[in-house]
Length: 158
Image: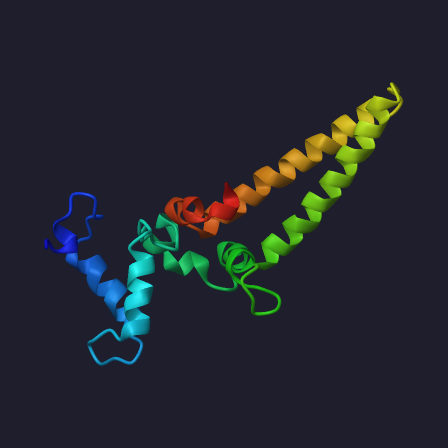
């Protein structure tokens, strides 16, 4: 039988990526994989690996701009730090509230439209404008701290 890596259907990995994956799967640092580690590898082989730099190129070139006392450092903390040590950042928590408020406004606007009223059209137009700018500002803040590759690798952003 042919080795898995010789199959034309097998994903191509360079040796640097293989070493990185192995180091993370060899949990007991013995240089071997036990059955549980092998199962992880088998599951992992079903995925395409995308290794990207977490931080954007501006921070890589000028890390001094990202200290905690500077604006870019504070924006970066909003993107990466969480309130409770979990996976959701402070910015994500805030934007979830904005999204919820936006949904409430959409329901209110839809109710007005279904009633064929135009009384608050200008108010809803202004509110929609503000929500649109909130999403643009969120995007700019995220990209001030995160690389484009890291941003695009998150399925939650699609």
